Length: 260
Image (cartoon, rainbow, N blue to C red):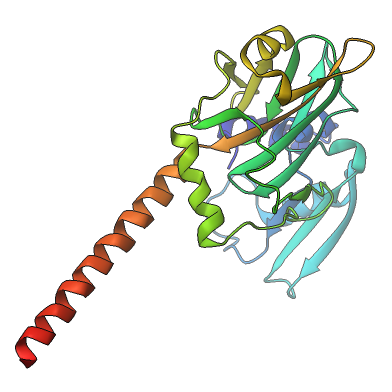
């Protein structure tokens, strides 16, 4: 859930019938859901019937889909101009059309920059967390798991899920791998993540094999946005697995000794 104050700003705009595109892009949302199963006598700031009346006539709403008959919920889809990707890059306030990203799984996102010449701002519209780190992308690590582009118009992201035990075991190496430092990781929009990626620092800290220099001096670059806590979870799972295996072996030995 995005920072509450930021979401409240969006609600204020909806109540006033004002444009919501800028606020919705900052929140990284593409749909708004209204529950109809709430008790109308319950104390709440906005009753479902009032929200439905506001959203039904709002100019920034594209269409709606109703689930259930009066006791379900309604999903409103925003106009395309009001929707932004969860991950975006910009330079001097302008979105980079040459930036793309691929979601390997919810904790790993490949960042692809093309033809960059100077500092780039990277925004990740999820709750700020210092455990999101940026690493050099290693082709050999994920060569069998390339992911797919995020579909901002769908209700859920589309990714090739790298979920085998062995692929998740690769997460452990990031606990020991050098990340890109110092990258300025800061709070943006009151809740989200922002990094400043400086091309000069990239060229100083990464081996030349990690990026490609074009004839005009611009650079093509791949990075990995990784949720570091995921590696600790994998370590915990492996410790639990090994511990359970050790107890099983001890139990089997005890049974064998007892049988003798």
